[in-house]
Image (cartoon, rainbow, N blue to C red; front, side, top):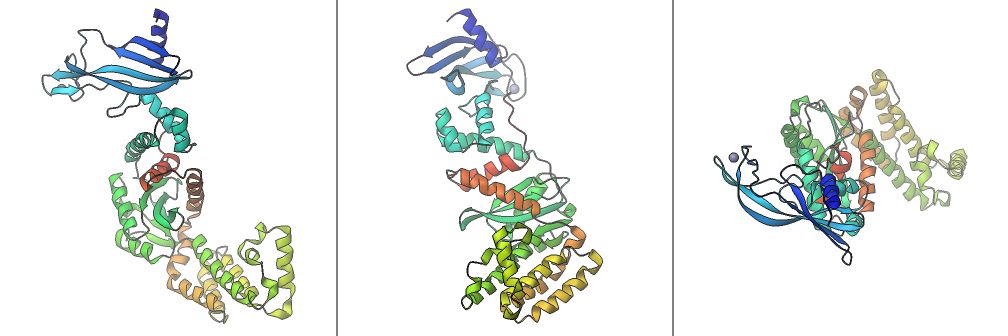
Length: 408
Ligand SMILES: [Zn+2]
């Protein structure tokens, strides 16, 4: 190899003294490039513990790191990694400038993998770079956990909790989002009251104060309610309006399903009762208008639907009339003689304060709904998570607001 090649690689690797490129070997059959790095005899190094300069080399060990490809050549760097003898600290392993300790990848290669992982399934990256996904996951988890550890939660005041599943129906995770910034703060396994305790611990670990949390938004699950009372007792609880309306939609759907057994007209009409009118297709709109126009039928489904619309209207009321409005609605719903609607009204009564709290807090999990759909997207793109920790790492990488990887 000529002087030119050495200089080229030297510049490309941005090596600091005393490290130099001492050899490069292309293997055109294997399509590999091996770069050998070395230091001149008599070189000294800093002590990795106390920073003392000019420590003598004690011994060395041959090591190899996977690097970014040069052209189409799979590139590996090898070097004898020294241990130094420090007068104060004894014999210590020197940190090499191109890789972090314990990693078989160079920093540049790691940064490349992490950057790709923001948009590409790990299986695909694994194929692209020719490394096992296990090794790639280790790199990603290390990076994400280091970055996530450094996040500052001291300004967090409003948070929303929501559960989602890793696979359909099992492996639940609870996601906590900062409702002001939309950043994912914390993801943990499970959907029980303890998830809120774990968030509280994490908040403190990141410089936050549980007493500074003024508002939390949750669904009406008893586990979250208990967790909030026990672990964030200073926060006002708002029951998320999307979850409340979802529950009401289910009640309306139950009514429709029961009634459609005796009424052909309602068959196949499921979505027209659940979707907002603005989101209906032309045909659905026409079907809805047709059914609503049949005045004489006195359909329970239509009555339930009207009660639903009235409940949704609650959220457009002014704060000073909201309570009176809800009272009126409650009277109507409990006298509807429609069982699923009466049951929903009972649930509203049991969560009265937290539903009305919305008018002063204005917090909703709307942000979380957005986050959740991104999580579903992550999930659908990559089936090969292997475990829930990897899944959580990718959620943090994409949604926690951690800084992008820096190769140096
Ligand atoms: Zn030292």
